Length: 208
Image (cartoon, rainbow, N blue to C red; front, side, top):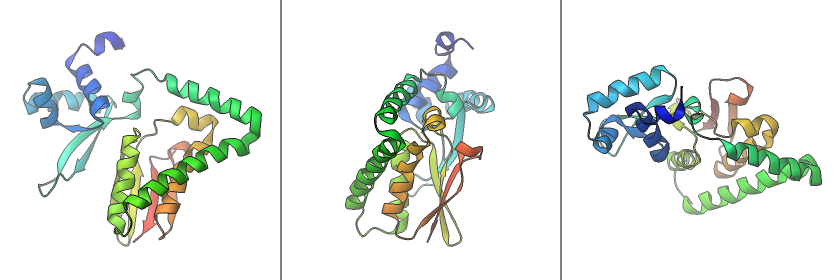
């Protein structure tokens, strides 16, 4: 695939829009491109077949669930990923100067600051509100995330990792989400699957 030519096509423009918007329904994209929803769905079906987009069901207000689309990890790779290289270079310098402990301390502090802001905003809120806030936080950072309830357990699902290249060399990056979950949920959390170890998703279970 030649990226420049691809982004001149309708499918390429849809991919670019999804990266900008994070996620959108066929109706949202139809309005943006002045096409019919069915025409957009046909393009999305091809993108999903090629592994470039993911589909998920979301509820907008009190209406019935809507299907939204977002880029998969493969779709993200269509765009330049220079930030991974830069971040790895910076972390190598930190490791040279202060060792693995210094690298770990950076991400622990990031996690604690994020958790502190989240806790202030959600003080007294029920578990579902806190889970929704964490999922929104992940999406803002480029993670295709969602949550579900399985009996007495809430589950947060991460379907991609925008920091995969960095995680391979510096697994401490993953400690941010662990710190946030431990600080925000007194109920306790348990990670039962991981993309970094070949799993289908990063899966975090929280007791209701």
